[in-house]
Image (cartoon, rainbow, N blue to C red; front, top):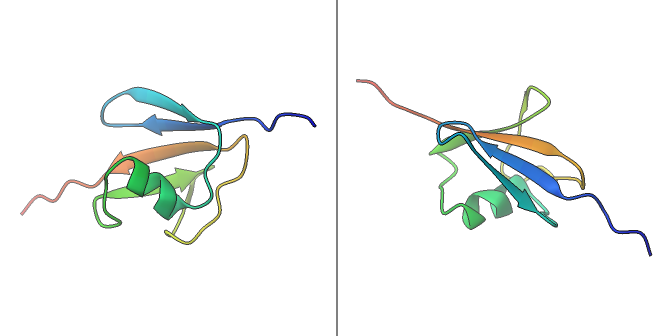
Amino acid sequence: MPQLPPVTVTLEREGQTLVYPRLNTAHQLLNRLDLGVNDCLVIRDGELLTPDRKIHPGDAITVRTVVSRG
């Protein structure tokens, strides 16, 4: 059985790249990063992902922290 390619996650603010063998949804990713859905944007190929969106093997995901300036 061929191994699926991992998901690459770039934490934009930290300049860090993480690799996960498997992720199901954007929400699962946020849980693993200990982030809430209002704390950051999850982006794949320029498209914002809502928490329920599926993440596929081989995806390159960017997590951009939301900064509020008031």
